[in-house]
Length: 126
Picture 1: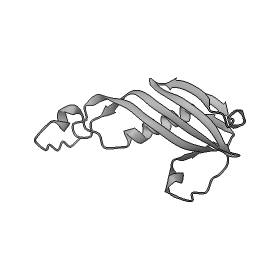
Picture 2: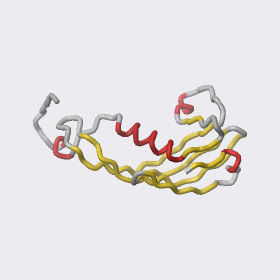
Picture 3: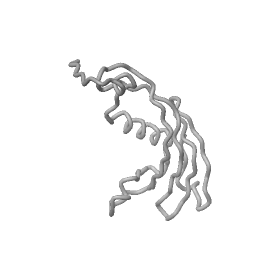
Picture 4: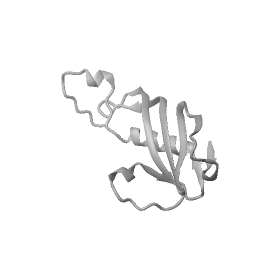
């Protein structure tokens, strides 16, 4: 799903989009000329690999997202600016936001329920 920056006004624009089983539902609101705020909820399920035993397991996603979106290069001025994305072609790409958030989740250290509940510390070399 793609939304042009110029189509977003100061009145919240609702959207809902699903990609690969992950749903992103929320609003886009222009707050300044080149800035649009995204407030949304991301829900769904992805398959992760356990970092301890390598078993695949389902991981439930239900997380709020708040981002500042820009259609020009934006200099980082403080820590809050880290929650921002730039879409230099003037198009907000909701698929790209979902993919980026899923990739971020996948990059963390994850253990399956079996390993989480295991009292023994096991190291398995793969």
